[in-house]
Image (tube, rainbow, N blue to C red):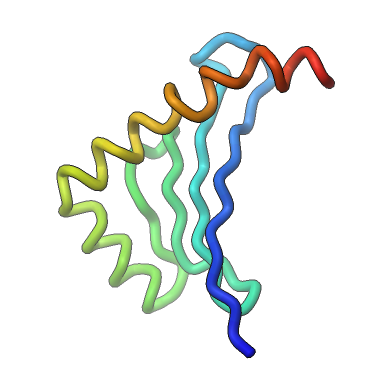
Length: 86
């Protein structure tokens, strides 16, 4: 069968928000085809399908606002708990 999935992650080396990166990756059959990175500030496509979707998502102001907010709502809100468990 085929598998399509997303992975959300926070990359950090301290609890300081400037040291935190939010990454939202899209995979199909274990191949990453697109990614949003808070450091880059937009989606980047890695395959033909990924470039198509990244262009579409990047042109949607609502999608971009939601993804950019994820660093604060997903990473920064939880980083204290995660950091203390390391």
